[in-house]
Length: 326
Ligand code: NDP
Image 1 (tube, protein in one colour):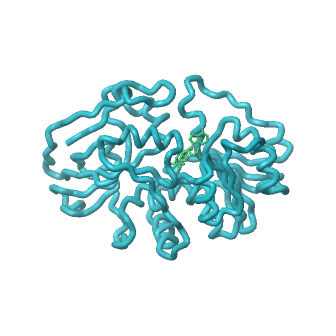
Image 2: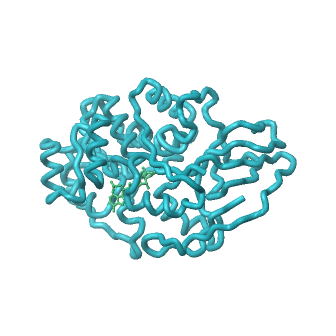
């Protein structure tokens, strides 16, 4: 069995030397335990900031995977069943079942199980809860979303279209802009090549934005917030433009604009609504089966390539959800 450990904490953008591949004896499950074999592993932005809090140097990198039970001494998880587990970057894991969830019981054959790490998993739930619980999205709203071609952003935009909204997306390449148009975004632009972000936001929605689903942070926010309508709502989901900073950002948020326009801004973590996950996953699956939710994946082959897949995602190589197939 193989694991990727965090050899030393990240300083700035991750490098190969932050990671070390370790070979270990295949673990044996005891009474009440199962042995899992990873099929797909997720690489996610949160791993960059959370690793400092959750992983000691020399410890296994944090992460979620879709795995198959290959040995079982636990009747809740028989041999052959598939689970989503927070096992870290490992090919094989012994677990007593804590933190494992079964895939939806009626997961359709034609839907790839890897989507349990993407649109029908944590990123999809993030999109849905951010829109419904935080923003209170209403038909007719105009929504701005950034990192729009990624796992969360592409799902945000599609759900907002299902709900009858106008959607504007910001993303980092022309190929991604074309993808957003394919998904039905009303407006999409490449933030790396626009001459003025302010102008492009004004042109895309001259009357401003009811809702802003914020994935990026940093200077983007400072330009986007003044484009909100009065009583606009902002969901602070992520700040990927700041995750590799060596000194923490201290703003500035255009806070007078926030006061004068009476904006509402709320940070959130997807785990807040865990008790609703099963029902929410069923809704995401239904949209997928009805052809209303496209779930593109950016697949890297080979467990050895976990660090490369992670760093590639952080620099925007992915269209859709970045995953690793073992
Ligand atoms: P993505 O699939 O969107 O991948 C990350 C993307 O971020 C890249 O593809 C890249 O796309 C973009 N990016 C990288 N650097 C920058 C930059 N400097 N400025 C702007 N964009 C950048 O990842 P996810 O969909 O998994 O996550 C999106 C956001 O949602 C992240 O901020 C993440 O932390 C957050 N999140 C929050 C959760 C919560 O509970 N609050 C749960 C899950 C995710 P591009 O080419 O467009 O630059």
